[in-house]
Image (cartoon, rainbow, N blue to C red):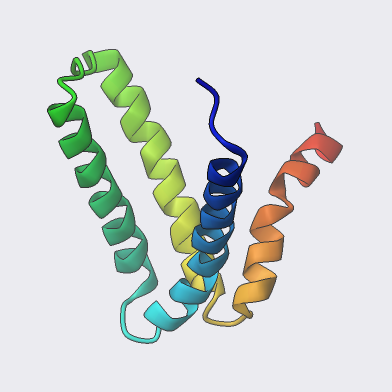
Length: 111
């Protein structure tokens, strides 16, 4: 069963709002929370939510090699997000969003 047109539009709007507000939320959050703690807490909270969902769905656990790869990938994501948090201390949230959003273009151009 394919999703209805209204469901697609609502999901797309939700993605725009959530992703679009991330950088503004970071801008306000770093006024009170150190950037690296903010980034770490964000991913820790997301990881806990995903772990609960996986537990409820009775997903099989990762083997050791997959867990190491996941931890490495997660660490890179946390570091990248932490550096965005640090950058937002001196640039606008809009500029941060444009810079992060343009990364795929730069990867394509330099590859």
